[in-house]
Image (cartoon, rainbow, N blue to C red; front, side, top):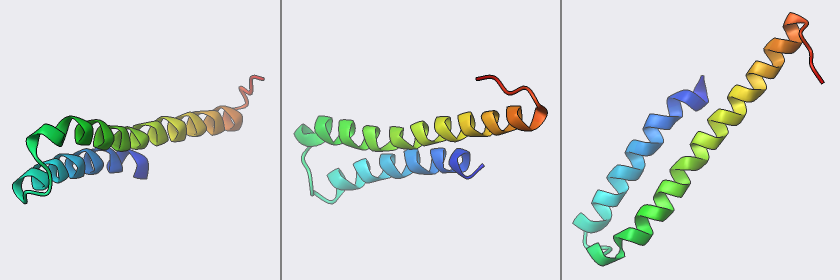
Length: 70
């Protein structure tokens, strides 16, 4: 559940960070493609963690239900 709740929070944080970097003059617009790639990749690590957690949960549920497949 925690992994699922974290997804929209992380994507929103990345979106706000991109806006602030330009608004505060830390980065120019010409630097944004690299920033977009980096922050999107960071956000996608949370997607990967969610998928891994979901797979683990499904595996545990299958073990508990007696449908163990190897």
